[in-house]
Length: 129
Image (cartoon, rainbow, N blue to C red):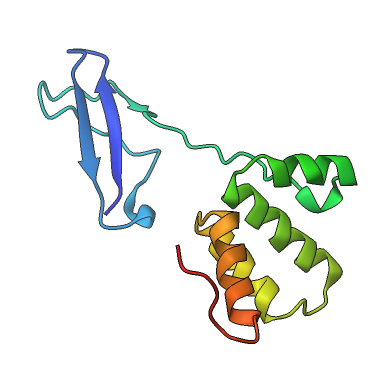
């Protein structure tokens, strides 16, 4: 249910009005103040969310990609992997996809590498910590 915020120019008090849908709100309509009854009200905008443009990691040169890899930020590395895969348009395999998904969730690159190496080793195990 959308809520719209107003302020009364007569008494100065803020108030909100609720509508069943966005389509029920008429910006040209008079919205009377519930405190003093005045029709001298103005709509207030409280919060505005602006989405930052995403960084196109697939267009980085090799040095910049290395900086992303060395940053230690798994989500940023995951975004790099994801964007590179999307740019190539090829299936880079299940291991690549699994690593990318785990990085995007914030798992450390070292633990992912350890798990994937253990899964690929002939013994299927490896040393335990």
